[in-house]
Length: 308
Image (cartoon, rainbow, N blue to C red; front, side, top):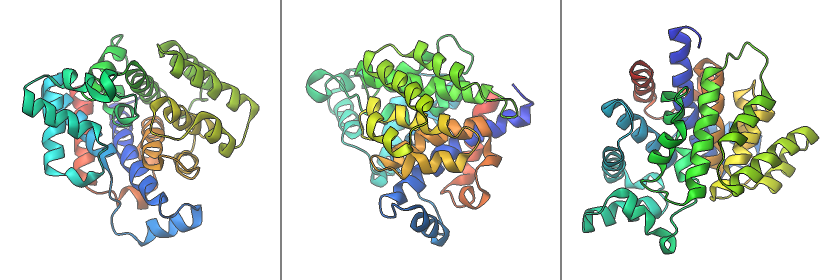
């Protein structure tokens, strides 16, 4: 790891990157071309984030407060934040879990296991918010378990957990690498393949490598990897966008959000990795200065770095 100040910049980059990717990705639903999107961003006084960033903030808050991962505390933090800001664009799963916990007195994990006919969710909601786990536990052998704990308060399906763990490992690798050194693309992806425990995620990561080797267009990669709400049909494409453009936050973002699909979450996941790798200074200043609650997010990232 670099100096303490550089480390803090990477933590800030991971959290602010999540918010920038999320907020600009949300705008891309209404402005799907690069030129129109940039004009819309320029016109806005503030870049408003969605539940993706709100839940990443909640995860970071909980980790800082307890010095690690406690599922009850994390679930309560998510529930309290949802209660204050229910309009952030939450999917149906988390509010259903929160309501069941409150009505029936069960644990968050038990409530999450009742979703979708008892199979649990394999959506990308656990992966979109997991950046704080990768930042806080980059060198921990139990990183997968930490990601599982963070995911399973709302996402009990093994694929949902696996996608979150792979995303956490990607952020963990990114925060540990020096961007001034040549980027080790093959090793980076191989580590993620070693991390994956489900065939659904593993096959998609193999396809990421194949598409990068073939140097296909981002449009083709998006079609083949997927851009939907299922984690194995979105997280791998977000990863592809980062691996295609590891030296550029902007290009990573545009790759992730200008090819359709779940644009805000694709942006949040891809830019969490990019921000953690390049650091906050690589995020265009005009963008990061407009991020809603930027000062609070940066302060939280610094607390996360100091607690780790």
